[in-house]
Length: 517
Ligand code: NAD
Image 1 (cartoon, rainbow, N blue to C red):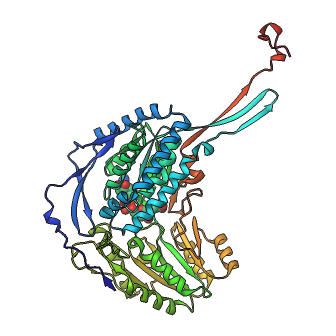
Image 2 (cartoon, protein in one colour; image 1 turned 135 degrees about the vertical axis):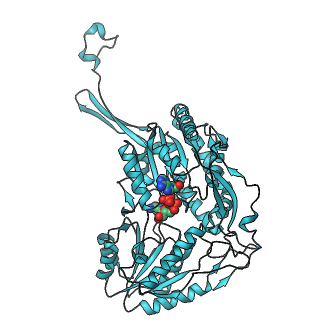
């Protein structure tokens, strides 16, 4: 395994006067007075580079009031005017996405090309949203009964809340806010406190694009800010992405408070490899899907189910590829980018490490061990080496729970059915993939597997923007998926109107206003 030599990192104790990352309210940065902040690290150096404001109740109320006032303005904008703003936002984003990628890498740690990749997937949703007039057209039934027409309108909800996780600070918010705004709502985004700057950059871009003040608000904070949105009678809906326990809490609390909820949770995605699969392709894809973004993707592959007799050969191929992976600062050095950056925090790195301990204690074989991994020049960075585990018992917590790090486990199974049963017996149902050259087997898999998003020889099957994103079981609470047609349905309320206008010929001549039929 090679490491990228990087410049000397300042130690965490060198942090002097740190900037405080503010809210965005009424079209401007709003510094916080709450007296509460959280550290924002550069995970590659381990250094605290800023602090982020954590809203108090007064700031939550101010953000909600601003979004409420913004709604009165924005909901009065014509379709054509709203579309102009969306097109301007798309153009600015496309032209300046490199700035956003650097911000993401500096706070999240992922390599720049990955940061760019997440922006492009978010931009797809912006592009979908620019076509909103077509998707928001109502329906019209003429003469449902004699002289009676029935038609429907799709109207915005009002103020909507978006609560996002650390692992996609640009893409996940973009799964929601372009559609919400296009539909005429105003959005309060509560980003992850671990990488809060992307949201502020996006807010500035909206302003440049001509979005009126109060339509896009950024509320920095922790549980207090989340609960403030959940408990406000003004906030009409919550779109949440994060870990399963919090997704469940959000779903239950928001539903109890009468709100619409989209609540996407965690994952444990399996790749089923049939004996006829191309093992070089499988090994390449397992590396990409298991270790890309240091495994901090909800669609990462964390388990390879190898249908025997392929396990030994596949493990050798994956191990060879791991040896060539370059681990380092995601920002790269002298224009050379590594394959994998650090994890988000030292606390998270230690949690990932503890899962490898658990697997080992439960009898698994640690084929490649990433524990204690350091990068020269970045010794304080939150790095964890790519890890490959073989023969992990399916009773182990390290098999059953989400690890969310660069840890790939192999389970050897004897048949397609044994592999399928394992996938279907898990608590999560976000993504899965089958690798095979047998179309009939793939077709059977897509039908039988209890998972929301399925790849056939595709390891990370994130649907394009005009489909919808969402898992099954503990990966999604409720039935509202992100983006696509689901997104437009979620962010609008339908009104059905039944109207009767009498034909002039049926009225008395004197009431006929000169229309002689
Ligand atoms: P997280 O659940 O810790 O945090 C998500 C959001 O919830 C953050 O904004 C955070 O501030 C807030 N939050 C945290 N604790 C809270 C509490 N007790 N009460 C109220 N709000 C709280 O998740 P994370 O660590 O930021 O993100 C990683 C998780 O997100 C993983 O489990 C991953 O699988 C999941 N994820 C899922 C998807 C998906 O589409 N299903 C996509 C991305 C990430």
